[in-house]
Image 1: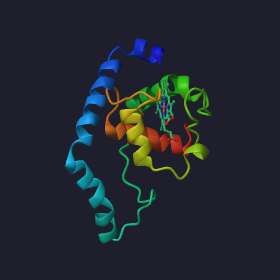
Image 2: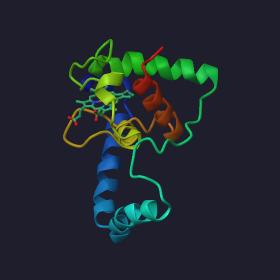
Image 3: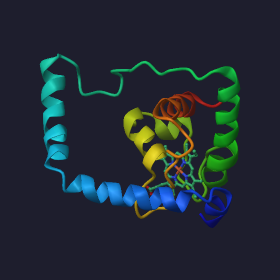
Image 4: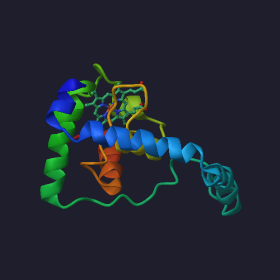
Length: 142
Ligand code: HEC
C-alpha cells in the first residue's frame, strides 16, 4: 500500500475525496431511490438481471492499450500477483472473476474498497478504460 502511495502522491488525496463523497452519498435519498428503481426498470424493459446483458466496451487506442496493460501488469500485479493468481490482493484470473458483475468489478477498480488495501484508480483511469480492463481480465490478459 505505501508503495502505491509513494509512487502516486495523489492517491491519498483521491482516497480522502472518495471517502468524503461516499459519506455524502449515503446521506442522499436519491441514491436509495436509484437503487430501488433499477430492478423495476430492468424488469419492465424485459432485461434479465444478469451480467450477460453485455454493454458495449469502448476499445482504447493501441498506444493507450499498451499503457493500460503495462499499468495492470506492474501496478495491479504488485498486489494481485504476477499472473493475477493473488497475493496481497485477491486473484483476478478469468476463473476467479467468472460470474462476477463487470460493473461491480469496474467500480472496485475506479473507487477502491473501503477498509481494504484496494486503492481507487479513478485519478488514472476513465470509466471506459476501467470497463476495458475488466473485459481483459475476465478473458485473460494477452
Ligand atoms: C495495494 C494493493 C492493491 C493494488 C495495487 C491493487 N489492488 Fe485490487 N484489490 C486489492 C485487495 C486487497 C482487494 C480485495 C478487497 C476485498 O477484500 O474486498 C482487491 C480487489 C480488487 C478487485 C475485486 C475482485 C473481486 O473478485 O471482487 C478488482 C477487480 C481489483 N482489485 C482490480 C485491481 C486493478 C485493476 C488494479 C490496478 C489498476 C488493482 N486492483 C490494484 C489490493 C490491490
